[in-house]
Length: 127
Image 1: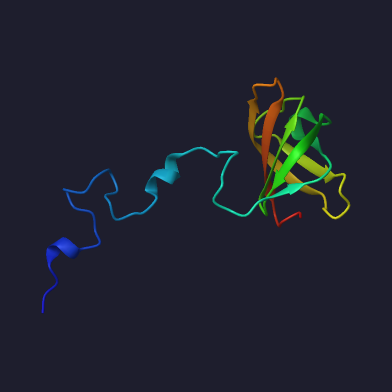
Image 2: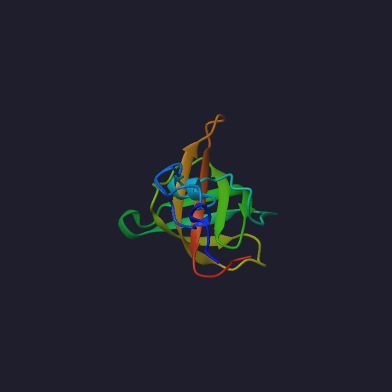
């Protein structure tokens, strides 16, 4: 018994897009990191997080409030901007959270004049 050619998992010339229809959610690969990802678990954190920049801009302090967290990222609002790609040390006012190292993934000016900042942690979950 032979398998019809139309059931082949490989893309064909009639497939839509460069990878064809056989790869689900392929459009997500080209999208930049977004602060408002709603696909994973997340929870609010009480208190503030303090960022200390490491590397070239050593010593810049940024305080984040209105915190949202997941195992691999942290987002919050600040009056102080920070450059995307900056490596930071993160400390929390909530003693149940442990400090860690992260990279700034996004810093966007919000309509209220403050900055929305998103960080991706290096390593394991902090909260």
